[in-house]
Image (cartoon, rainbow, N blue to C red):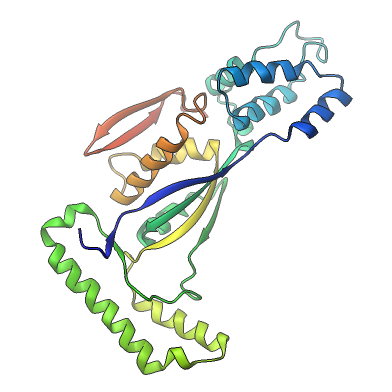
Length: 265
């Protein structure tokens, strides 16, 4: 592939974690220290902090962190079983408490414009076309266009050369006032392609992720967004095994189509 034709890559850069000092203080002061033992058992099953917190909030709703706070119950379920019950019952609001942070590089604005439609439970921080000038035009190219890569390179090279000529004619390198420089950079980006490579930081909670993974790994979704949400699933399936325990996968055209049995979540 041409060195200026790029493919997206997703990085897992952050996630919700337990502050054990604060959690232990809460459990001690509310006379529920036994829940710490449940946490230790969940950790032995390789449950993540985020999954444990989701169960913590679910149990808090029903005063069932221990069996002594609610006279309607005589025993409590382990955290793992509680999480399975959450999925079975569709109690999706409690899995919104765990958020996961990604950085996606070499993605196009075709992708980002589709991604930001998934606004609920999401946060986005994208490369600014107003502040960031284009030194080198890299383009995210669908491999389906391999038979016409030469034509694609012609188009890419023309736009890159045009941009450089425009910069020179406007003497953008000599502009000292940053506000003016920003306005010119913003104006010039209108002539850059939707396929231009950029970066976006994305944060989604587990509930939103389950929905978005299913929607955007569908065989009917656009190529690039399928690739990226396949990468996201690969990054998460072992870190959050219980939250993806009901995933069913099918390989279609070189990418997984992922669906979930529990549609209510």
